[in-house]
Every structure is written in structure tokens, then in C-alpha cells.
Image: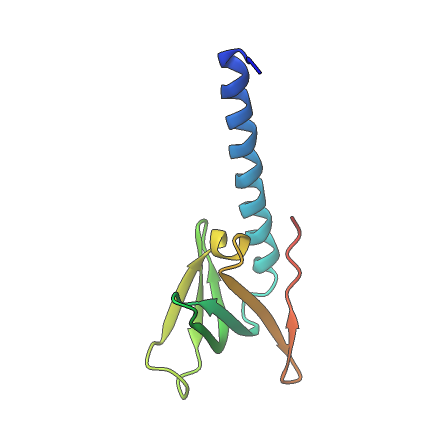
Length: 107
């Protein structure tokens, strides 16, 4: 089906704005959990999933930082982008009474 060139440009702009809004909503949702103990599950490639606990230390415009529990890992902090949550490469759960509770991200 033929479409005018302005239509294609408009369509791409709508997709870009929708993706940007989704990432902003993820950041806003995580802002309320700063300082909370969390469990993170991340796809580390080649069918390797890592699972770590730590504190959601800070959220920035493009990434969030987790301070890991020192007894478990050699790294002190890790950071992930909000796109990692959107693409489900990373899954976050809040620890409530030592039980993980999945974080609901509104999209």
C-alpha cells in the first residue's frame, strides 16, 4: 500500500515518542523504590541468568544503579538501563520480609 512520505515520518515519530514515554514511566516507577532492598535477575547472555540482591541506590535519566550486597559478589555496584527492563533482559523484585515481590512497572 502506498503511503505519502510524511505519513512514514509521522509513524516513526509516534513510535519514538511511545518508546520514550514507556522508559520514562519505568523510571518513575523505580523512583519510588530507591533505598529498598531488591532482587535482580538479569540475562547475562548465552543462556546464563544471574540473580543478585542489593539496594536500589539511585535512578538517573537513562540508567539505575544497584549497590550489591558485599558478601555475595566482587562488584560493589551495577547499573542497567530502563530499556533492559522494557525488553525483559532484567527483572526486578522488591524484598519484603525476605520474600521477593515482583515490581509492577506501569506501561
